Image 1 (cartoon, rainbow over the protein chains, first blue to last red):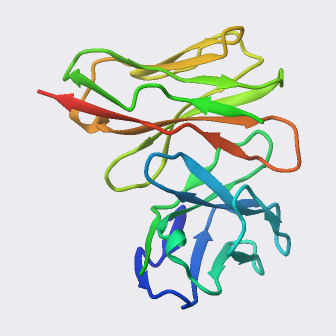
Image 2: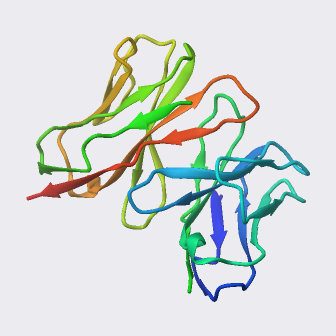
Length: 113
Length: 116
């Protein structure tokens, strides 16, 4: 049982490049989330999913897209990376949405030059 | 909108001593959940403790306990018998119990140093 895993752990992009971050969980959780963490700020929700095939916008969705084609995977895409997207990205999952604890992955450090 | 405030950017405690981290929040809801997460240098967010607002009893997990004051909207974390491994960033978080998704609102964090 690996919990929540994220790929890659580190990435450097040039402005305008695209990339996809992969989140996988093996706990059969329905809900999955993508957050970003910036210095001096708490985590902020980018997008989330309440089940396979569904996605919804969070607090800071602009510049990102997501897909949840399989229950265990939640992908975060950057179509045209910008320096403002330099951040640490965390994926999380929970069994239920309203009352359950969120389990976090180890994070991905992304730098956009 | 809900806000979570952690007014102590950094705290320091000696090994084996007790330290309390502060958190206040603002909400008009009556039913919600509060959490403390620990983020060590490895960056992974680890759940430390959770409190349901409808419960009057303060949550406890081994050396970690909370002081939940609902009327004052305060949720502090007490770490007893501090250990070197407790050194980390600690985030307080709030979650509504109703709604279309389980959105966590985080504070800005408190960095805890543990000294010998």
